[in-house]
Image 1: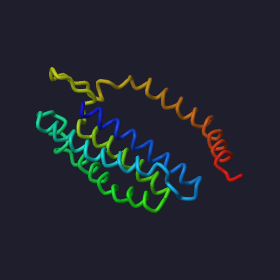
Image 2: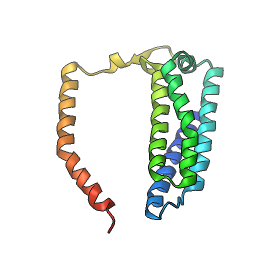
Image 3: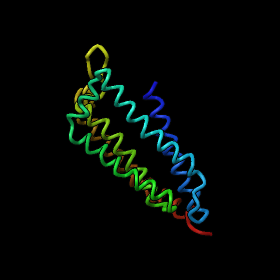
Length: 171
């Protein structure tokens, strides 16, 4: 229902904003996807408020956890403060600011959602829940995963940097 619409609006906002930024950097600051990005930004803000209002009315534990978490409130406050930055970036064609502000907004929304439920990762209607500690792999597995990710970053990172440098450079 409403959460699905919020998620769709958020994905459209991300895609339209990044497409606008990408095309704007190619066309000298003109943002061709501006109308879609602004509309989806407004829809995301309105639907996000609607999701919270419905959760509060239905007495979902997320809503109460959200109001009791200073970090979650701080995340949503930061996302709110970034709304004018996104609007300013759209208006000025400031591609770098737009990428930064959109990324920061989405990151703070996702972080706020996770922090509002902390330490619960998945809550079930029956009252059961899976916490982050319950869902974690054994320590040795996590250490091996961290080493594999580090090695992968060392091997793949320079190639990705080279490709971005070659394909993003002016002809």
